[in-house]
Image (tube, rainbow, N blue to C red):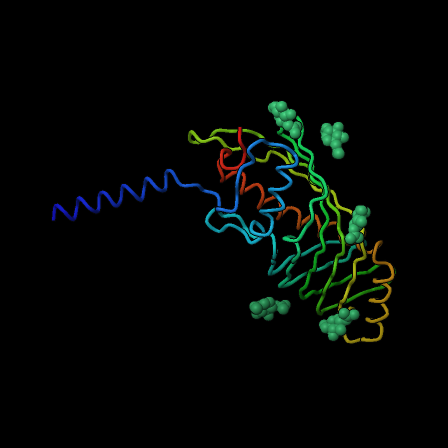
Length: 244
Ligand SMILES: *[C@@H]1O[C@H](CO)[C@@H](O)[C@H](O)[C@H]1NC(C)=O
Ligand SMILES: *[C@@H]1O[C@H](CO)[C@@H](O)[C@H](O)[C@H]1NC(C)=O
Ligand SMILES: *[C@@H]1O[C@H](CO)[C@@H](O)[C@H](O)[C@H]1NC(C)=O
Ligand SMILES: *[C@@H]1O[C@H](CO)[C@@H](O)[C@H](O)[C@H]1NC(C)=O
Ligand SMILES: CC(=O)N[C@H]1CO[C@H](CO)[C@@H](O)[C@@H]1O
């Protein structure tokens, strides 16, 4: 009996020690020996594919895919769009073009470009420019080369005696630099001919359409990405990410 208690105590001690000493961040994350723009850029490129899957043990939601069972948007010209079972993929393959670290390493500007694919079911009511629409069908949007400029302001804090470098502010600016291709079925319920005509019009005017209607959707997606990135920096101690 005493032996049993002795061993369980040792075992318990070993487990708690391992937890106390163990790294919180996944093994694919290594801090930069010297914090430079080059090293940070390299690290982001390295971790993006894994980070994109999410880190359940830290409560970090995936950013590739981003899924939504139901999302409503009020778009330009009073167009109401309701997306169901929507997915957005491609974030894990984004290319970092430039990373600029400044102000004693507490702000950074990142430029990247991505090819994204969004799919789902939709319902829409209202107008697309001059066309009245009343749609209920499938939607697929291929976004080639969307370029983003991301600005991040970090802040050093200490929580329960542990130093964290959290994100104080993160902003996105985007531009549709490549073609956006839409495939939308049943834009005018029950009228396949008119639906096809409107779809052709949408694809011929993809840039205007994407800017008119896409921005609130990109904004919503950006908020989800910010949430994941913020959560990551709030949970992983600074020493595991940066060499002070
Ligand atoms: C969304 O997916 C769920 C589960 O797969 C399904 O039951 C539901 O019918 C889907 N909704 C639409 C509008 O496609
Ligand atoms: C990097 O940031 C500094 C300071 O914010 C700025 O002056 C410089 O132009 C930036 N360089 C690039 C390549 O963006
Ligand atoms: C994407 O857009 C950027 C900025 O306009 C441009 O420099 C780059 O060549 C484009 N890349 C592709 C693959 O089209
Ligand atoms: C659009 O999607 C439908 C299936 O929903 C498919 O049959 C069709 O080939 C697609 N069109 C294009 C141009 O990709
Ligand atoms: C790349 C860069 O801006 N590095 C700077 C990080 O901050 C230290 C001091 O806080 C500077 O010496 C580096 O030049």
